Amino acid sequence: RLLATAGTAGAAGLAVGAGGGLGAHALAAAPAATALTSLGADSVPFYGAHQVGIVQPMQARLVATAFDLTPGTARPGLVSLMKRWSAAAAALAEGRTPPGLADDDVALDAGPSSLTVTFGFGASVFPKISATAPAALAPLPAFPEDALDRSRSDGDLWVQVCADDALVAHHAMRTLQRLAAGAATVRWQMSGFSRSPGATAQPHTGRNLMGQIDGTNNPKPTDSTFDARIFVPAKGDPAWMAGGSYAVFRRIRMLLDSWDQQSTDRQERVIGRRKGSGAPLSGGTETTAVDLDKQNADGSLAIPGDAHIRVATPDANQGAAMLRRGYSYHDGFRSDGAPDAGLLFTAFQADPLTGFVPVQRKLARGDALSVFIRHESSGLYAVPGGVPAGGGYVGQALLE
Ligand code: HEM
Image 1 (tube, rainbow, N blue to C red):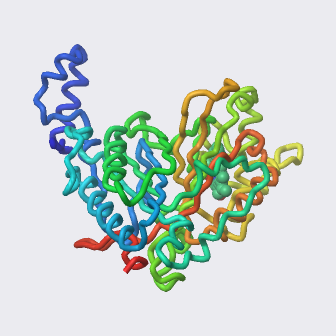
Image 2 (cartoon, rainbow, N blue to C red):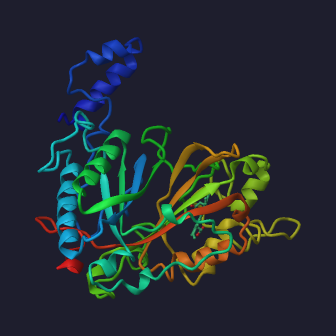
Image 3 (cartoon, helix red, strand yellow):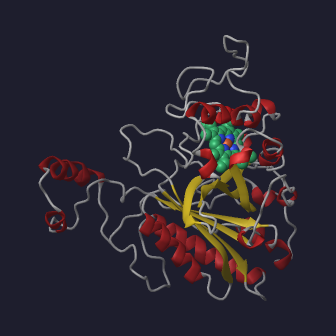
């Protein structure tokens, strides 16, 4: 496999770009090891205190898949699967082909492209391995307006693959699915996309399919409260979840036909932020702190009472916070002609009962956004801590 390095990339990229007249044919004939950017060579080490794919900046592509254990697969089968999957994820993250499998060559000439693979356990796997599910995996309550398709919800195992290249992401997921043969089968799979690095002049928060800048007020790894909000503490309960997190995954369709009929002013009041800049309606720029008390000249609230950011803010939810890492999806059009498009909402938190649940309870009761979205699938997964360098596998503390 050819791996580009940042050193070669800069000069070559500039030369080709500045040349202007080089067509695809000339590019194809360029020296094989020359890449236009370092994007393919970038890598995220698999080993560490936490699993990857949580705090890293979002990559351009997501493939999320849920698996169910095959009938008869019990704890030894799951141990063996998690060993194979962890070794494969570590190899793929370095741009290597996993051992013990004839590669399908799909990602042969690409680097790891910042590939991350994140594994989670759904509540349904625990009885199959004679273990007790953590209390935090209690089923999410039914929220008003939920329209969940159970066949595309839940699952024993959840695998989140992210990378800056679609072929790399799909190759990784296919490799993991092949390695699961005999132990687990696919329950559902969904693909999502975000902005490609380099697509905008300055790196800034991505946009969703409603056109909003989405992700601004996420907790930041530099916040003093970040670890406590996102990760299970070292002495947490159960002990095997130390350093882990809980992932809530919701496929949320956007009712884009009615959204697109709203004026920009109305759209901005639904969220509480400017569409173009992402600035709060209380003023400033995207990163200016939100002022929920600010009033317009006529005495009305600058950020309306039912604006999404007012209802969802940790300040109104006993500090409830989550790290949102959502990707857009667009899977064609439904039989009614509406886009089958929206957000593959993924949120990581130390405890969903104090993170996602109270916030979604309030949002579903009637934030201004609710009438423009429909939650169509749902999953909740325990994402164990990371694997220390030098060996081991995800879930080892639970399974051994
Ligand atoms: C903020 C969009 C669903 C929780 C935001 C923002 C946008 C947005 C544009 C403002 C920028 C930002 O801070 O990221 C959406 C869309 C959704 C959706 C389009 C569905 C399709 C949800 C759900 C939850 C949620 C289901 C949790 C249950 C939050 C939180 C904030 C936020 C906590 C930050 C509020 C703050 O502290 O300022 N969302 N959201 N969102 N959203 Fe959503």
